[in-house]
Length: 70
Image 1 (cartoon, helix red, strand yellow):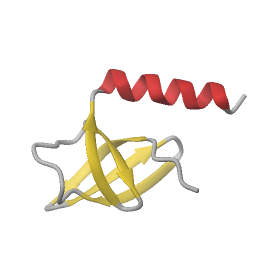
Image 2 (cartoon, one colour; image 1 turned 30 degrees about the horizontal axis):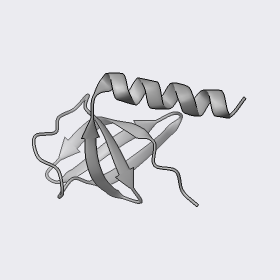
Image 3 (tube, one colour; image 1 turned 180 degrees about the horizontal axis):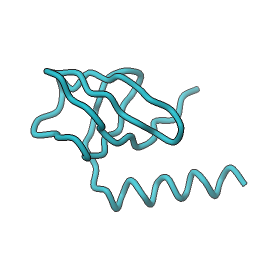
Image 4 (cartoon, one colour; image 1 turned 120 degrees about the vertical axis):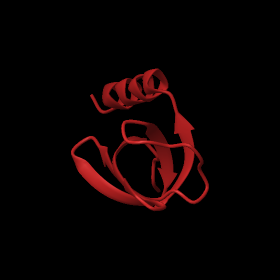
């Protein structure tokens, strides 16, 4: 089972983005999203970006995940 967590976009080339999440780097397809840029946060399922979220929402989600791991 996979948990989709917020990922920050660090690079975009065409419809491909490179993201970072915690200590991992990912490559995701941006075909379903519009108007995303470096620094935005997204939710991705497998290698497909499915939603753009605010930085504050991303931080809240990441904090909750961190607390669950304790």
